[in-house]
Image (tube, rainbow, N blue to C red):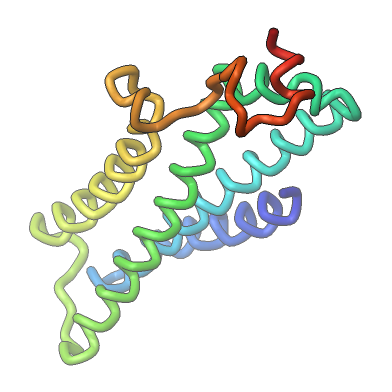
Length: 169
């Protein structure tokens, strides 16, 4: 987690400095997508540190508190952060690959000052971020709680071991 935060922070700051010198639409889109990959990885680093902190805090009592933790709002938020981070990285890498393949044949790039270029860049960023957040938030919607089951306790379910069933009696 710490290394993910350190290296992605370094890469993000370096890429942001490079944005000032970019003259082409292709160069700008390339760097923006790299920034989005870095954002996703940075979020994942924060998630990993958070999970490690919870693990240290709960220590040997995790098994006793497992179901309470899994049903907590904090766990749900960390799940959303984890999924959002993964989706941002995945969508940004996919967009980066598609963008690079689609621009291989065209050596002449539009400038970044055109309205069309700005709309494409902003639109790509928004589609990636909004899609990632929507996909991450779907499992915690109350309307879908019967489909995405999390934190339910079945007192007399034979699939649970006796120790789990007794714990929640």
